[in-house]
Length: 192
Image (cartoon, rainbow, N blue to C red):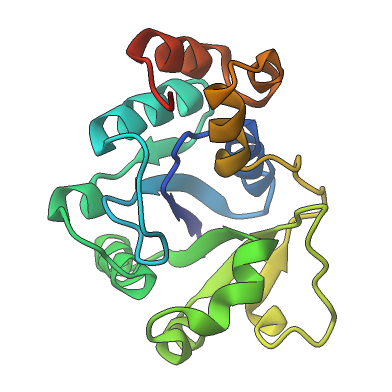
């Protein structure tokens, strides 16, 4: 059975670790494609720093050259908070002959117990987990049995860290962002 990975997030901004997660996921046997789903309002966050149109534009720039990827506007078009189980159910109706998996970081795995309808989510879907160097996941992690772990640790980059560096005009941020995304942020004056 083919597998489709759904990669949801704020992408505020999208960075090189997001792209790296996608590329590593595509190495998993049977992954047909990765669908990026930018959240209009992430249920677990209180604020977005760039508007949805800018976040989508940056996402397009970042994944433009990664094969087998697409961007879905399912959550963005709703213009409200959409929960992961709703998004995965939506894609399961679109692709009934494929297994739908959710791509997350190990930091999200650690917090899964706080997600809306988590029992339903973990009984119906599996997760692809990218290991972050700063997050240790033990063998007794509650949902580890529902996960496929990527072999390669992902760069330790966060959107929060990037926004702070951009506020200071720190040049170090260039190494964390796709060149086109960096230029877009500068041109639009985002995160100042």
